[in-house]
Length: 480
Ligand SMILES: [Zn+2]
Image (cartoon, rainbow, N blue to C red):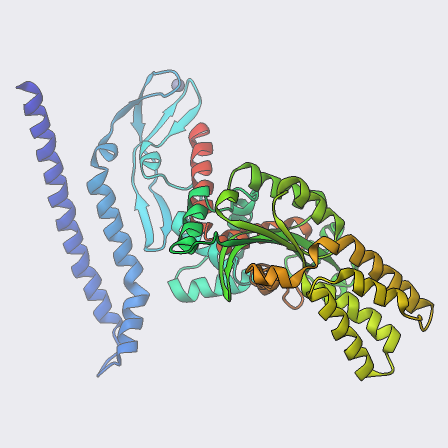
């Protein structure tokens, strides 16, 4: 009986709080409409003029609505007069504290919430902040996410400009940098990969209604990224570097190495996962191992094939990690090698050069590697440089013999070129990292690459959620 009475009293109180909040909001809306009228252009404004006036003022209204919602939904936390210290259980009285104003995509939200301080533990607590899962930054999660997403697509300054234009809010260059940095910090291949269930689902979709298991390609490749040396840091303290300062260090193109897993069916490509970093070969191998050990690749449901260039480390890794995979040496990479010899040997006769290259490639395409090698051995090198290239090509073909059967690969529905990974390179690396005048510190380039992989892999949302969860946990363990 007594409990029922208490509940109904609490309910009445809540209902009252709701009514009060509504009244306040209606009153504010009247006030807002008045100021909107005052800002309205005269005569017969165009729709654009009208929307501009509303756009300029809408944040004030939506921010206020949010404040009212907070008051409504968190009435109890806002009314809280005492709280036990989470550490020592002493009862703490609410202290007067200035309201905290946070920035969100719907405008500024001002929060007048109770604050508690334990003198014994020397720690302060704002239970409402925790209930609302506020970010420690003034800019809240929605703003951070939008800023980071933009910064992953365009240079930081442009991101900031676009953000201001599209939202009517400001976002400092500094915040964009910081959030993008923190978000991408410590991201590894598994953090940016879709889950095993998501990958299996895409494989099952591709396999539906077919007798053959779908072809899953692992393409391994690299793309060059313009980097700046670490010592450039000390030289350029200012945010805007002068031309003279810039000239003191030498930029260097470094290879971002990585891989892409994708499903193919004739011309159709279904992306599964990509990972790129400016790193050593062993690190690419280690990332591949992590993917394999996490069980992300459903090897029993696909026909796995690996496409790569002649780099030995690739094939060594593949042999260990995916021993059953069909191995294919990228046809276009192979053709480049053959072309080089053709150019040196028949350079002065374009027709003859072309004929020779085509004949070589035809033999290789049909799987007659021995025949191709015999042809090379029979050549009379024109000069020592040609002799050297011929020798290298023979070695290259001998080493790659098992990966050159292009016709058989084609018949089996396997791709013979790594067009798939070149497209990924372009989307992940080139469009963001290769911009005129942009030279990246390796660490920053890798952060950006990780973020771009997350977007490309469709995991940006989950990467952001993980960042948010971590920040909230850190804050909980270390409140103000
Ligand atoms: Zn305490």
